[in-house]
Length: 484
Image (cartoon, rainbow, N blue to C red; front, side, top):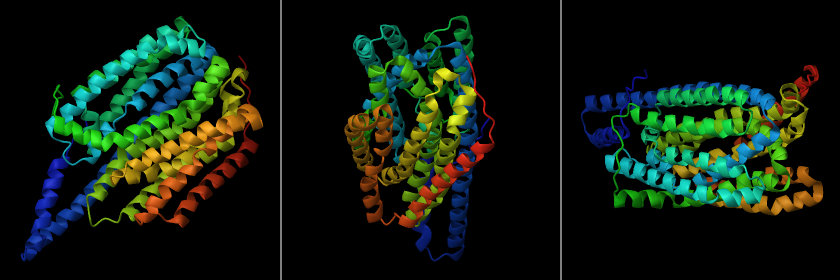
């Protein structure tokens, strides 16, 4: 379906080295051919980047539309507490995955030698072992989790959710290879198929048996099917179990800071849901999850674009000494900011109207929650690309330090916010916990002569303009209130 006419990463690097060595040849025709090939290489990279962006936007956009429609349908069929229970399973699976993240995807994209079979199979073997261990840990946590959240139903749901961790560990490394080559057509089709399969199981099941079980089990089934399908992607190899100590050592050395960053990122990002579920109950957590899902749609799209397109692009630029990283960074940043700041600002302006128009009065509190969460996503996006740029240069430790900073300020800010303004105060504390990380990322970008302060201020202008536009349009939107 998607013809792969691009060279592998190893072939590109070999060709570049051969041609750079011949630059010193006195043969004018040889130099002319080299110049022509360099122009072709740049055009090819731009073409792949454009195609990849189209695939990411169209595929993920379709997934989010399907997710929104299904969310609205399920909100009529189920009760808010069901979404809260499903959210706790998501906290556990996401948490265990992030707490053991060694940056395998980043390593396979960034490292020039990651096309070698021993590296790919070592990464696959490590993922499989890790998935099995995480599943056993999750099962062991089922009883403590049910006691912590005061919900006996969690035990059965945790057992079902643990199967996802095993399936994720058995995914082929082909998805990382395709992302490295910026060939995303197959990945887009595969992920869209996974979303359609999830919904085709979830909605009929919820109609026949209204409970939280369809929300968790449907995702587990589709994850298993997705993992099997990744082994049939056209990348020119098939994974097998193999262990290479030197390859694993390279992964470990590269991913040690990413491991720490993922750990503190999880606690910083999930502390709100953990505490709300524990002290305010599953019903409140379900309402909060509705607003969180809407705001995170933008942040999730940004993460996919940055990890799947921008990170490989910046890694390519870093390996080319003739490229100005600052120019490439801000050229990409402009497009990302239009989406991130424009999208979050506009959603903050009209978000309340969307909630009251599409959800019934049981979810009314999600309207004001959404506005604060949009600000949080905007502040997070403000620094996300800077962290990615530093990681592509081999400085992954700054991602860890910025995540640690967010976590510390979240933990310290939530009690203060609760004392000053209750639940609303805690949400503002969570949002502004993103700000101190600026003093981690910006100094290093400045040291590497990448940072442009005037250009950074444009992001704030974009957010405020989009928010003003959303608030202005709100005057002409009809008042719609959905009833149960």
